[in-house]
Image 1 (cartoon, helix red, strand yellow):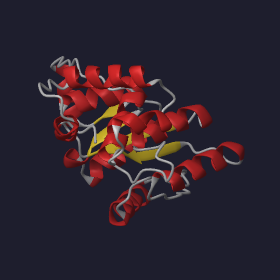
Image 2: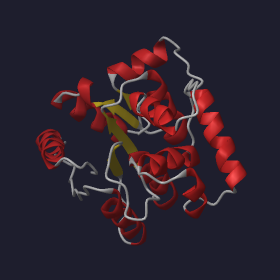
Image 3: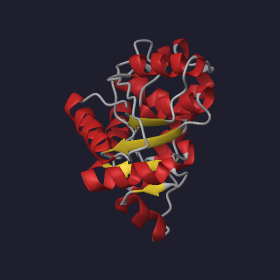
Length: 215
């Protein structure tokens, strides 16, 4: 379980332990940031792989700035723990953010925290253990009404946004991302089009990215 709020993890743990089936045994490891989670994922891959992974989306970035969210961790987990079931938990409830997570991760579970109750968490966990996908009500409503979004932000674009939000200047992005300066500028222009930014200010882009849950 990965979340930067210990009380939230404690609540998840207590719910799952109280509602598990008699034949189920729960051994739970905890991480509060991207570095700790990345270490546990890679360690588990060579020892005892996890069956289920819980990722919050908003997490403190890794020290090297390469892992910035639960989405990044989920992608790492797909490589190192391909058989593990991934559950994403997030406060973001905008349709474009939800659809972006589904496109990038395709998690076995996607739960919006504002929807979540103890009984729903327990129900979701059992469904996912039985190889069934579980989406909380907000996610299901978006998908059932066929809401679509043209906003799709891939991993590299999210890193550009993250670095800009950390005060890294555009001219220095190439020191952190393996792209040419012209490719970085092209991606920035595409992001401004995606987010309907009419001026040339990075501040405007970052403000809209935050509003839409991408930072």
